[in-house]
Structures are given as C-alpha cells and as structure tokens.
Length: 255
Image (cartoon, rainbow, N blue to C red; front, side, top):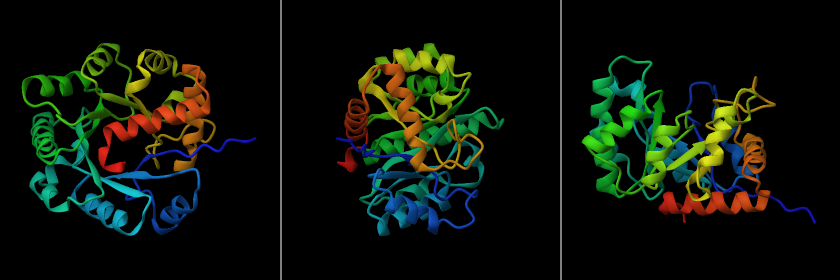
C-alpha cells in the first residue's frame, strides 16, 4: 500500500514580484492534494493586504502579515492592526538583515511588530540574515515574543540554536538543507529536538536540489522532506506527523 503524504503547511510568497501572474500559482496550489495548506507571508503593507485578500477567497491559504527588515523605511507598523482577520495566523516576516545598513531602524520595526504580535496573541516569523545574535539581544533587552516564534530558513549558528531551544522557539528548514555544501545545516538538523522544527519551501526562493535552477514551487517540499527523513532517521509518516503537530502548536489558528 502506498501512503500519501499530505503536508499540513508551507511558507510561500505568492505576492513576490517574481511572479508575473499569481492566479496560475494559486490554482496549482489549490489543486495539489499533497498540500493541505500554505501560509502566504507578507513582506510589506501592500503584500500583506494582498495576502489577507487571497486567504479570504482560498480555503487552503492562511496569511502572515508584517514588514520585512529590507522594507522597513517605506511602511508603517501601525497599519498592520487594520489587516487582522481570522486567517491571519502570524506576524512576519520581521527581523533584521545585514544587507541594509539601517539596523537601528530595523530594530525599532522589530520591537514594534513583536509588541503587535503579543497584543494580538500571535506568533512571529523571524527573518534573520546573519543577525541571529542581534535578534536575540532584542528579545533579551527589549521585548520577547509571548506566543511563539520561528526562525525561518535558519542559518548556521550553534550558539543561537542553544538559545532558541532553551526558549522553546522553532527553526524551519528550507531548500539549503539539500545542497552539497550543507554539512553544518545537517549538524543543526541533528541537534534540534523533533518538537521544535518545521520545514518550508520559501517559494519562489531557495529552490532545493535537484531543481535548484528553477523557480521554487510548494510541491518541492518533498525534497526537503526526504533530506530531513534521512538526517533524522524518520519515516515519511513520522516526519509528517511531527511537522503537523509542531505547526498546530505554533500557529494555533490553523487548528
């Protein structure tokens, strides 16, 4: 008997400028029986608005609303309150990114958005590009997420991983875990407790092997799944059940 894996969720960016037309992408996800649901992640006010609208008309879609650190100078956090709906399950992506030098502005946006998440009793999705230590300093010195947190596409950082585990936060693995040079990512995967990991495609970005040169699709989550099964010595059904359980614990509105 062939057992069919039905993933509980994936993180995607349907509103990415990479897509000329998002309608075929939405249709493809809706017709894919292996994808039970997706969290369409906003990166600024406009994309967050669009994400909420898509979730209202598509049963599989949930929304995360937030202002990505690379978009922090042209948006207002206060507008996020106006976007809350039953299908908004998190605040994110929020965080810090070294590619922009306005780190102090990014930190203020991070602090404000964690405060919004805490007020709304929602978890946060953290984007941390070579800035894990600085994000943790914000948590310790300013404000900490009260209702859960996931570091998405977690970067190699054993010291930060220890803090994340101690605080019961989650990390999420994406396509990089499948790359040939992913030795350190594999070590991270071995160290993270099974109760604290998720997987994602982050489509249309970070395509996994063997489709690394293509635009990433939610269906590619199967390659990340296969790699994690190998690393953690779990069957597909075991991994699915654990990911589903962890998802429901973090994103409580998706139950």
